[in-house]
Length: 383
Image (cartoon, rainbow, N blue to C red):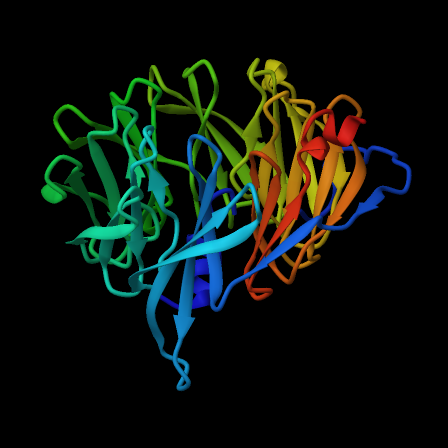
């Protein structure tokens, strides 16, 4: 899979045209420099923080002198010292991994060779390599931690791995180009984006079969569930919209027009507000989820940096952090005012922002991890 393809297909949170609501006025944001920087040998793709917050595991890709992608690795960063302490070899082009609740297993999809590396984080070693095929970009654990779902982008199958045996126990046939899967809180259903037919497919996890195919907008990427489990929000990356699905009926109830190339949104804990970053517009659309029947439920359009690529809401819900892939920065927004109050300077092409003991920015072509101290995550953008 090319990096251009991965840009569209592999983003987890992956992004605006003409503003659809008046922009919020704001003062010049404070500029914040990293308190530490960790350097990688290759291109970092995705980070996962251990449950205790002591380690950050980052998938890293490597390229040979002739430009061919070769075996990658997972790098472990000690968050107490902000140093790289461990490199674990995995497959080719590792992408979006996931970790079990105990923090003892990490599941790494290798998009370049169609495998999943299972890492024992106690032994710090790969204990199994599971063949799935299909250029997988995601390996997603169910809430119970008993199964890993791996969509095969080119095989039109979801491979289901049993975490007790590290073996594929079943495959689920899908529509073309399945990309990302999101589980309900109880794990009873999973929502899968099928980009080849511009649809979301509903998977019954008890029978491991597709029970519904729901047409949405063009180019759907990873879906997001609301906190109450009643709605599914689908960012249509090419269609410049958000489709809202009622989980009780499996039907689209609303289609919200936003900016160009929206990425996966974030929703507040109350389920009343949603923020959608729009990649090509360099903006964030703030949506009032209580009034979706309005002609335009977008209440603010907030200008951020170039190429917003990932969105993260802090645990307090008062600060929204937008990773600006083409602007080499993270915009800190106070959610109470809709104003950008801080701009965090990252390395080149940041891909993801992670909250934990500090705030971390995974920088792709910058081959680095920028670390910002924990105090900035408290009241954060509102302080």
